[in-house]
Image (tube, rainbow, N blue to C red):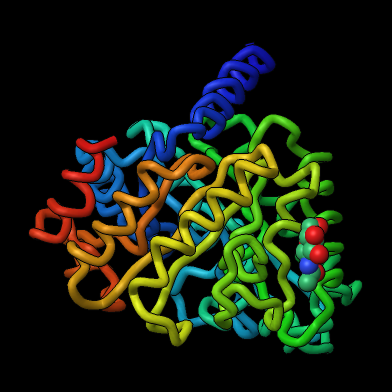
Length: 348
Ligand SMILES: *[C@@H]1O[C@H](CO)[C@@H](O)[C@H](O)[C@H]1NC(C)=O
């Protein structure tokens, strides 16, 4: 029973992302904060609104690292302190992620769950560095940090290894190794993804990178370069990485919005050449969302090699008020939502 259901699930997921040759087949979003909510009804509302809109994928943070125990009632998943890692499996810990996974099962939503942040939001690699020493560039090879990171991965995967709601395990959010040789991140991706496959061979694995470091159709701008220590094509070639990921934030990267569509096309070409589908995993602008992001969606829709897209980020009304607004948020029920979700789903 168990083996059969895993197999059926794996086939379904692979068929979803693998049928990418004519452009995107599925769409979804990001709601990093979903696993930090403390009210089950809020989690259900978000996933119910997503489901009724036709969104199929939701990417959430599977990490929440701290260096000191926060005040009571504040959710955290792992305490990293004085060279020791303690995973919080309690009601203000991984039980919150448990609820997201069970709610996703009820709402036919597939989750992308990642294991660490490059940025210091919700701890990130810096939280490991604070507890174990080293730096943001040595983190990838630091044995104490990597041991804690892998143990955390194993703990999370073990909880949901049989869940039909897992779309993919993701190594990190936007990993960078500034100024490093691209072999540093490559070697870390190879060993971590192989480790994940050794625990769970039925689910897909992806990296969560921004897509930096690409020579196909490069315009010579910063995002195509290798200064952040990643080579998109090199990492995509790793056997235990099942599909590619890339992000798109022109204003953060010092390029114009018209940079977006060629960036999508270039990654589609790299993915098609590698024989693996890609996910346009995060994209956003803070103004003129409908026209700018709508244009990118139209490009992705017709780009071979792009299997799905997940905009940054989903917004909704919660019992505590509006979900986090980082100015990229597209709230359920707004005109931007109609343009970028309802119309996009209809186009797919
Ligand atoms: C990136 O990786 C590709 C594929 O392995 C390789 O052809 C290319 O030379 C690499 N570029 C750099 C700068 O590492």
